[in-house]
Length: 402
Ligand code: HEM
Ligand SMILES: Nc1nc2c(c(=O)[nH]1)N[C@H]1C(S)=C(S)[C@@H](COP(=O)(O)O)O[C@H]1N2
Ligand SMILES: [Mo]
Image (cartoon, rainbow, N blue to C red; front, side, top):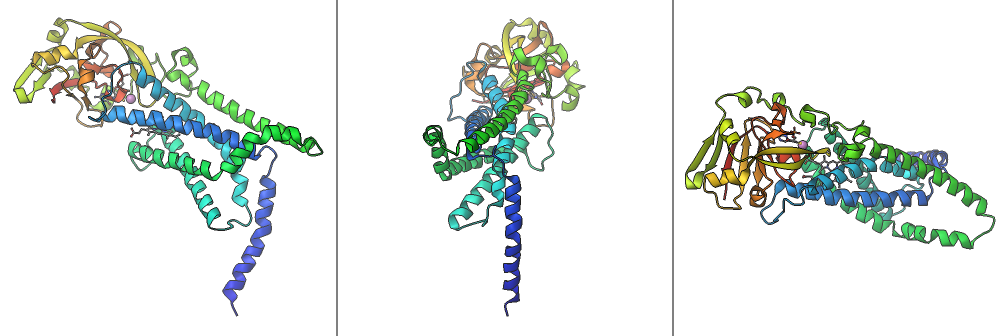
């Protein structure tokens, strides 16, 4: 009489033993709730660290007027973004371990037991999907492999809020398991009876699983962290860029050829324009004139948003001395433009605090030699505390904004 209903009941009847069998096969003593909790704690802590350092990176790049950021300490962005990428990479094996530990729960039977369990499963789905996407796009971005059909930054930023939110929700839902895990060691001492053997087997399997994840994490970090930690630079075999490797001993993110400035950057017609339109002031300077001005040296890092960083000895003209030539008031914001015609990093905004810093240079030399074309010849910006993307190369114009 109700053929549709009968069929679906039969399907469910048939599915149950299959799902239970899948679950039985997937179950292993290493996948104890405690394994999941231990890895979960690491993941949670890592997500919080990545969220904080990522948000900082966003704010340093946006330089919102309401947030008076400081160019000092000079190494701050280098440290926060180095940590962001190192922790982000370390999370990859931890997340894979966590998914290994919990995936048999996909085969829970019955699949849902009510509204609460539907919500719980949905929240885990969002958590797993965002975590995988966030880590995958992050890693792909550091490798400059832009295979995804959306622009990285806004998606990575939005996902970071969703991820943080779903971690908080997940911890709230799992609080009983987490709390039980805090109590576990003392509880085990108490019931010293015939369950002991099983506990031992589980403890050994758990330790094996955690050791494997730990080893994979250590290997990932050891083979990449040298991109921002000079002492380990020789080990950074998995990093797209390694300190010391590049023209003048410094890596290059975008070459002069890629930026399309091969001709314009070496043209004899090049002049630096320093402009304050509101005062109607314009100064044009040749490279020889810039070299004839007082030269200042500064040891400052290039700290790429993609995680690699390296200190170098720059020298050139203090930016604030150039701004003084057009009578710009101390602390003015400026816009720096390059010879590049296309691409996101052809111009950059610099807040007054940075423009005024005595170590902010329009650099003409690197390591005592004229700038290599790929490092921004004839002139580039180098300022303390700025992400690499804002250290504009092949500078053509410096414009006073306020
Ligand atoms: C735990 C998860 C993560 C969170 C919550 C997170 C969060 C963020 C946030 C909020 C930003 C700033 C985005 C913006 O400027 O608008 C950022 C930037 C960045 N993140 Fe992550 N991130 C995570 C994982 C990763 C991973 C695994 C990697 C790669 C290993 C990575 C690589 C990057 C890079 C390269 C940037 C700089 C992008 C740019 O400015 O061009 N992130 N992250
Ligand atoms: N005009 C211009 N300047 C630029 C870029 C660019 O693409 N165009 N790339 C930036 C990035 S992402 C970094 S990390 C630094 C790298 O400087 P380097 O090549 O001298 O090491 O230059 C920055 N300056
Ligand atoms: Mo960069």
